[in-house]
Length: 103
Length: 345
Image 1 (cartoon, each protein chain N blue to C red):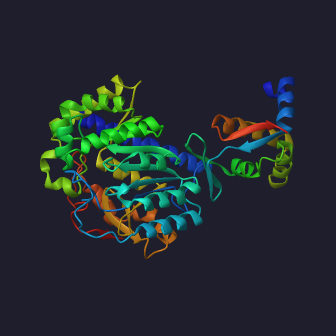
Image 2 (cartoon, rainbow over the protein chains, first blue to last red; image 1 turned 90 degrees about the vertical axis):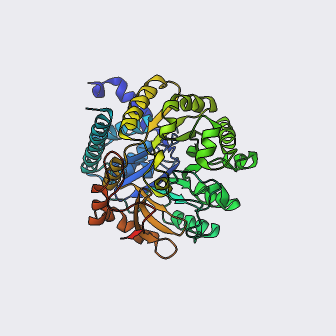
Image 3 (cartoon, rainbow over the protein chains, first blue to last red; image 1 turned 30 degrees about the vertical axis):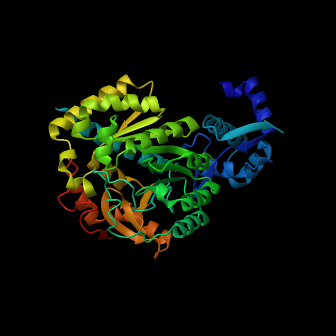
């Protein structure tokens, strides 16, 4: 499995030291959902976990710091949380509302 | 099965699919079950109009009721919306919204600073370079210019003012040239049925990103001009022609064909996202295609009005209105939109 590979471990390390930047034009919280319009003007809806993650992306915190904060909120094993967030980051990058930058 | 029946079947399946997808997302926690505040609204800024189009759905320009919302009222209303979280999308229409002059831009500035994206519907008659320069800074999904024919003579006759086609074409071209996504809207009347391809080619020449072709909405002034409605036979021709044009021009232009009025109403009644039309007298209507008023922004708090929105679509009167809408012609045996009195819920 890719997630057990050396290359995934390296990618994970790089991402954890990177800083996520939100590229949204406009956001609004609607209960547990975050509504976002990105630069391509598409209206997107994100669930509670993605919302909590995006709200912590202030362009200052490294992903590792965000993982630590979310780890205190969610009762989930740390490595699982990191894997889930990497999936979320890929989805958000694909939707062009998140950019990762080296710290 | 004729083209109409095929079309209605397709539309019905499409609504079911959208509703099912939405229900699945709600169950997964990825979509709100209810919106505390609207995502989008339409502002009919004024009932004044410089044209007298035969099909005008809300009888603009007839001075039936003077505008109660002043330019300052619209600006104040926009500020209230922004203070409560703002809207993602605002459609500005009228009457002719450019008649609002500087206040139009003051209103748009308030929303623009909150990162709202606009749609603007105009006949293009008053458009000039100064207006274009002011519009360039805003974010648009589309700027719509209405052109009902590729012939200036037929367009001018339909819209009641000589020279209106030339001004619309000039406005459309300049909008597209500026990089604002241009949408041409055209109404399919019996007279234009054999000229739809010319309209498509005209839209491409003007640089349009989208062309929306709609049937006459059975509402308002259209009832004074029965000859502009398509017969069943003509509707069949309309659907087959537009299907063919969509395929033929798919690489050059995005052609949209409006759904039947009943399908639209059925869809809106399940939707919890797009919100309401604010009229020049401040009334908030469920939608421009039906006569139901749920509040007035000059009198009521917008959050209180919005709280009623989703439930009102399920009210017995609205359901009766939708059921009374003829699936093919769209004409309504229960109430005639913008001709009879509004119904307050």
